[in-house]
Amino acid sequence: MHEPVQSELEELLQGRLAAGKRPAVEAHLAACAECAAELRQMRLYSGVMRSLRAPAAPELSAGFYARVMERVEAQGMPSFWNLLLDPIFGQRLVYATGAMLLLMASFLLATSGNQPELAQTPVQVMAQPAEAPRAVQAGFGDDMQRDRERFLATMASFSE
Ligand SMILES: [Zn+2]
Image (tube, rainbow, N blue to C red; front, side, top):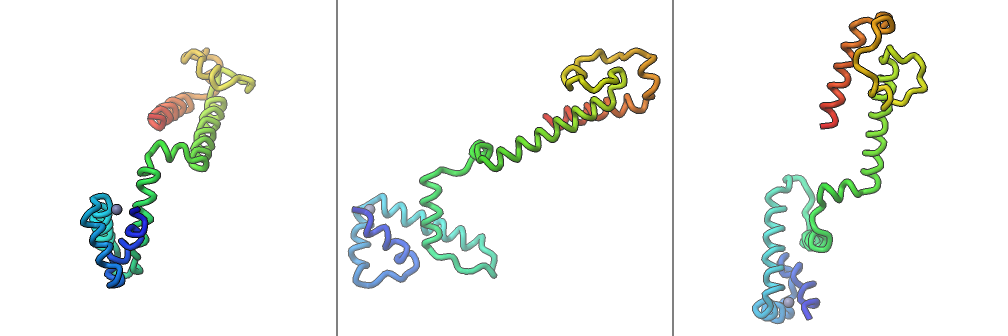
C-alpha cells in the first residue's frame, strides 16, 4: 500500500515528480506518518550528504540516499564485532597473531641461553626459572639478557 508512493518519494525529493502524480503522493504523505517520516529522513540525509560532499564530487542521486537508508535499516550499522566476524578480516587477524607468536617464540628460543636444545616449546621455555645457571648464562652476556627482558616488556604492552 506504501509501495507506489515510496518509489515516488525520490522524484518528489528531486523535484522531478510528474504534476499528475503529485496530488496522490501528497495526499498519501498527509495521511501516512510512516512515509512522511521517511521523506523527512531522506531530506535530512541528502542535506547532510550535500554539506559533506567535496565541490568536485559528482552529483549523487536521491536514489543513492534511499539505498543507503535501506541498507542501514536492513542490516544495522556495522559494528566492531561484525568486523571481527568478517571472514577475511578475521583470517588476517589470525595470521597476524600467529606471526607475532612465532616471532616471539623464536626470539625466546634464540635467547634462552640455559636451553641449548630447541625441542622445547615456547611455553616450556617461558616456564623456566628466571635465574639460569651462571655457567650457562656466561656465554650469552648481560646485554642479551637485558634485550630479552625489553622484548618481553614490549610484547606485553602490545597485547594490552
Ligand atoms: Zn505510506
